[in-house]
Image (tube, rainbow, N blue to C red; front, top):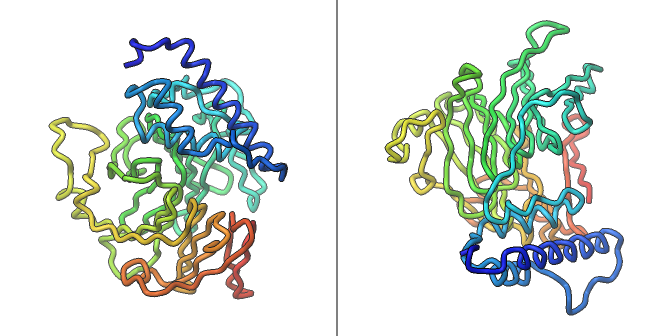
Length: 342
């Protein structure tokens, strides 16, 4: 336990370890040679952290902390997060900052997002043109639905997901009319139509790996279900189908009456397939092509474009190799091309 060790000394050594990781990652971004005996990979970070703090740290928290540092060294996480402790401040803020604004370029209008905290960033923006909605997800847990009721007026409802895990992406379920978001260990299903003071929804947990991105598979064949694609930090792509019956049949027996009810992930049939040798950076379903795309910084399996059936039948997939991998991609219907960015 933490009490049985020299915590002050262990914490100082941990800070030094994180500082070395940040320097290492900064050199990598500068294309400087960092291959030496002191290179800190996940295995070394894990073993050192366990040696410093013992069983007080859990594997998933070590994994999440390492990923946060390596993915964004400039915004290092607070040290309590290694113990799964979330240091949240006030949800509101007196003045807007650059991190807390949603910019709708096509409308030439800027909306101040008053519920996003300082040092928070928007991780996902999804537009739902049919319903005149714009959905945003912030890294530290704020899901927001902007509803454009009139030409120059926006109303919005929001849900603050208070947990030590970051939200990594969001999308909209067109049939069930829910907002879906993924964190490092859960899948959130939020009924945005519920009253702001009585947010309602479901959380699918636990997810064994860290979910990094999500995309809805848009098929109008059944109004009582939706299908989503998810990518994780181990290179796996998942296919999850959610029906309205699942909200009733698959609730966990917690004995507690919660606004967000837990759904046991083990009760779902979730096909998955390892398509990349590194994190899945983005995943998207193209309804016009009836294909999905996923990308990774993996230099061998950098970009995948194929039918979602490949996630279940394990036949060969169409894969493309790009040096240093692919970080982003998009599809242009008019030109019928897919553009990737490394």
